[in-house]
Image (cartoon, rainbow, N blue to C red; front, side, top):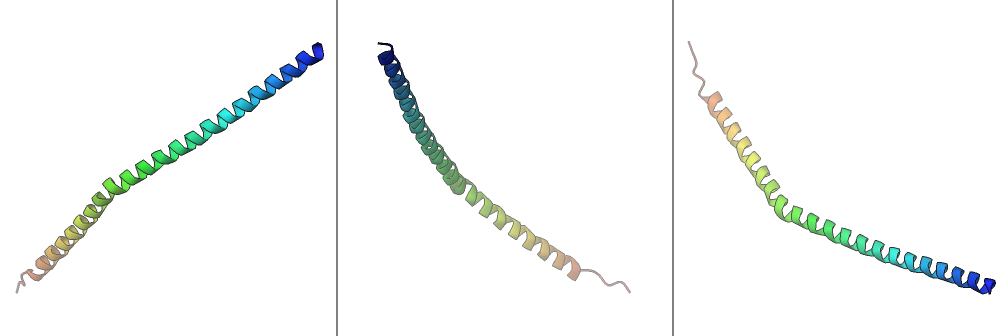
Length: 83
């Protein structure tokens, strides 16, 4: 009787550990999948929303640089010559 109880106890412990392992693997896979999805959403939003802002900023900097060059050219051309 004692040997049979010990065998059943070992079986239930092994069954519980096996079920815990399956559950842990399942939860781990779901977590990795959800994390990957969240990273994809954030990356797509960044490209969609931040990308145009960066391009506009670069264009604005280029225009300001051209205006600065034109202003410098005008100032250097209109220097009066004193005799």
